[in-house]
Image 1 (spheres, rainbow, N blue to C red):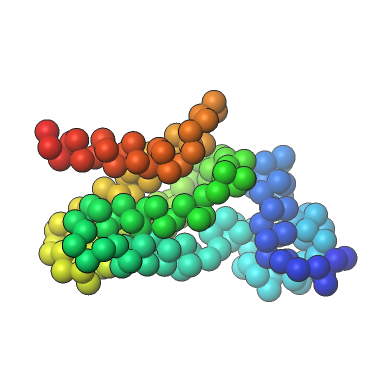
Image 2: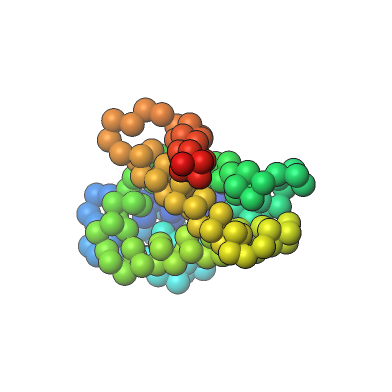
Length: 188
């Protein structure tokens, strides 16, 4: 076993994604994930509580990237522009080389209602965090919550398009398109 090799958590995530894609979530065992990653099962459990947790690890860090992006928007930015800053900050998580793994993750979640619910809760938590960041910037309710949830809707739509077969545009372009459409709806 290659326990001394760096980035055990990353190797476990990659191994899990590969196995989930090959045989599905239910048929994949922790032992198989650990073996493919070149670590022991004990090492797996140092990083993740169970195999489902591989799909949802680092939720706090995930949300913090969006929230920090909202906080870092220029002081005179509108609520929607601050949310856009949060969405663009998140792009570090969705690099082009991760598209294939993201497709597998999305496929696994789509096939499992319990995981779908957990994904929705994760994104609702991100929206709540962005709304709190907007309130910190002086945006009143319900505007803060509406802007944050609209931003998550833009991200969700752009992400689904990014993962669709045949899509060649990258996520920044799809987010920009979604923000343009959202702004157009506001002017309608």
